[in-house]
Image 1 (spheres, one colour):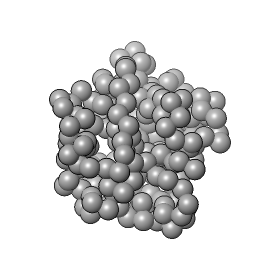
Image 2: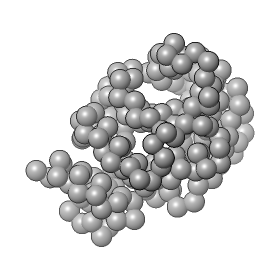
Image 3: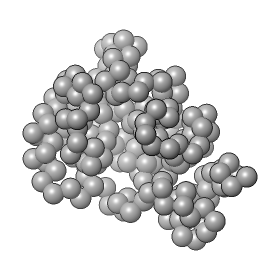
Image 4: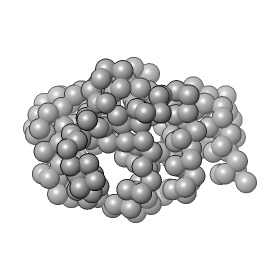
Length: 190
């Protein structure tokens, strides 16, 4: 089975994340997507707990994507580095093929990732974020194979912007669905 690994903070999950997953599955790049919310080990402040983000991801995907096409994997959220995550995935699913899903902005600095060369044995699914010469950058990084996706309408969607504008749903309603907004609002504006 071909499995896309979509790891990130998802703080909160928004319409852009959902559209990326839907596109990857619709274009049949992979058979299934594992969504893995990261723990708070970066220098990045996390606002919703891991449990809240996991619950929000499940709420966000319910009824939008067939349940057999994705897995929200909380048990693998403990890894501070992506290469460690992929090591565990390979142990758990030794015969499956994995594809790292990431934005083009992450590819630009990919060679600074810890043990990045270990990840080059996997395929990449890169979402173009209007980076100049992105295809050349991907080739220079050197993954086993890659898919470059140009997904319209997600470029301006930002979890940070959503959090900063929780008091005005009109400003963010194009970025986050009502029920997900209410979930986030209830937890961050208590």
